[in-house]
Image (cartoon, rainbow, N blue to C red):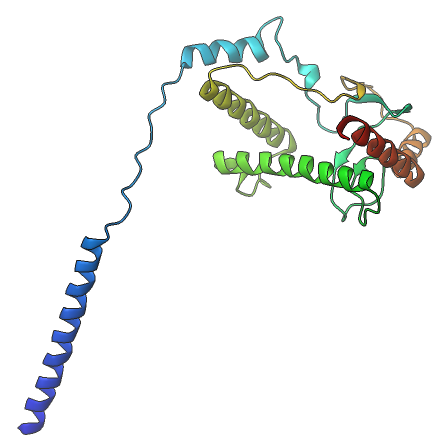
Length: 235
């Protein structure tokens, strides 16, 4: 009998201690209230104007962005540009060190030794991260880009990506209340529509294109020309 009464007393003490601790916690929360939740600000959107801009940009007879601005599946646009007095016939992607040293991939200098190389590497990294952030923003805004897409065809994936980019630009344009100005590189360049051939290129032409795209000396020359270009326009 005495053992049961003692256990009841211990249990009662534990309950009292828990209750006191809980009340003290509640009092502390009252003294230090949480930061009030910020209400989402209502933003008035000009939907009729946005619809008109969408039509004028992409669907009007004399639209601002004709179909030639977009690449078709498996075809690249014709790119010609001149930098530091040398002419090049292939565009390039900004890439990190994991990619091969081909003229279609432009990387930063791994161990920059001069101020010119350091400036170019910093600029290349900044531009590449801007592109990566743009894709991150699209994935955060449109869930369809954040989920696996293997069930879609390549054509459907291209349409999805293009639609998300168009919608994103419309949202930014509408939120800023003004049209975005287009800024282009200072390098003399000409990007034309893809050349469509009904017949595939011959094997010899294909081998020649592959060799040109993997030409390491051309990559070294292009990187050096871009280093000089960045230095001349930012030093």
